Length: 269
Image 1 (tube, one colour):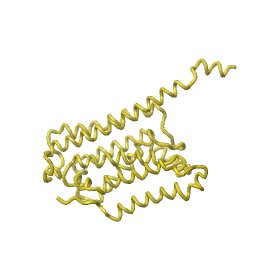
Image 2 (spheres, one colour):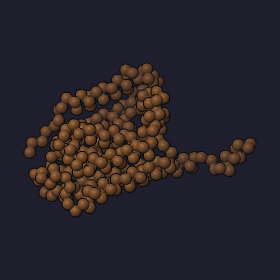
Image 3 (cartoon, one colour):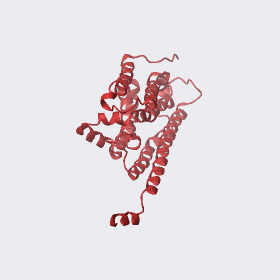
Image 4 (cartoon, one colour):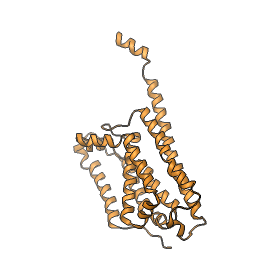
């Protein structure tokens, strides 16, 4: 086994282009977009960290491990793309920059629909589940184009899924507290079928990993179960963290609002 780092032109050009466009938007174009704003150093570090994690997910030896040897490694790769790099990109993009991109009304309306929890969450759950159907999963492992499509859909739909809970945008802002909490609960429930499929099957499902050389002391079934556990633990960790912070913010907003009687008294004075 010879592990290597990917240097494909498409991968490197894509990542460099994204980094260059971000540098352009937060640097020279900042004077035109938001002349009163300073360079967002902290957010830039988050954004470029997201680029690094994206490369580690798809360009490091982790990609080869997940593609040829270990289902659990492939699951780690997907979790990095879905939750970690997306979160860093969302928090790393200044609100004034994302709102400038959302300035056209048609774009704002489309993004508003796609990022609604009922749309983004459902799209992510359906597509994510479909990619774990053995036929599609094996196709993605054997066909490089399908593998790239798999990663792009997971990353892109991960952005849509997390947007209503994490976004800094004012044009398409975070959703109401109640909607967010309900959406997060449904996201946790939505991954249960895949988790059960992977961990309770009683046998290894994907031929690639059944016939793969054992590079560590982990048989195909336990590798598959480990992958399912990694998926659910990270999903639960993210969801519960966001759920907790959302509930806290909701309770603080209720404390800061006047009581209904006080509001009525103020209006009648």
